[in-house]
View 1 (cartoon, rainbow, N blue to C red):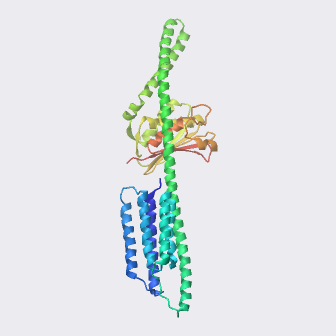
View 2: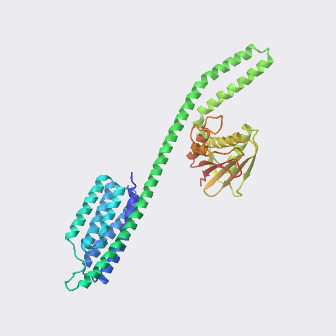
View 3: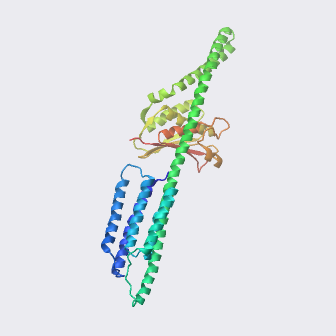
Length: 414
């Protein structure tokens, strides 16, 4: 769908330029050519064009969308007023007759086919009528042949100026419209990507819920059997110790499944505002428990008071996923930095791993794409999706000193 509001704004700019140019042309015809013009009719037409432009500016300040029929009617009004100006200023003999082409070219790049044909027929009709019906610029007499040659030179010069201005105006307008259409296309692509991502996330959540439900039964069976085996083999300490370990692991799996089913409710109850430094400290403490083999150096690059962030379980898990990715790449020598400004908080992780290849960089963040031999390829996808909910994002770069630089950006909530 064309952005007719922006097109109408550009059309108002062209009208302003036309008003300025035609006013100069009238002054030139009156004071240089000594043309016998119906000056009051011309001034009235220019005032109507200026009034239409003011109404258009006021219209653009409203919240109502600009429809295609409305934009078409604006172009028709322009053609009628341009035709009226040319009628009082020499008709088809006026070098600025090509001004009639501007609405046609604008219509051909913005309107549907039926409206373009209507504009084309109107332009041809107006031009044809101006070949016959018009008020001449200068009333020539037979004894003024030298005057005819002088006017012919002025006419040729005027046509060149008009051609140049028409090219500049049309080029400017088309470039702006192409830019507007490009932006509109980008927005559509972004919405399409977001819809696909939401569908993938929904599919992943559905699969996770189904898997959690299906795993519940075998885990319950395993817990019952392990209890029976512990009861039957109490006289075998070594076997009993292994059975207790298995019992402990199955209990952990069952608890994790139960936590998964309650994650949506817990997401709301665990949401609270914390300074960014406290959030990162809590995440690093939890990460160190999970990955004791990882060694890191952490620094805060800002001495001002840390901004507040809306902390939830999903946000903490997203940061943990990124830290685990860094530890998977190389658990030794990880550098972690926290920084912020008035608009954003920056959380950076620099690992000493092999870095990212060009092929991997094109697919990072997509579901089921992993750079590791193990893993399902959903960690970074879930992290990017979660951060997008908080109007943040995550980006991965090859660090100049080697390894991968992961940068998380979160907006500051004032």
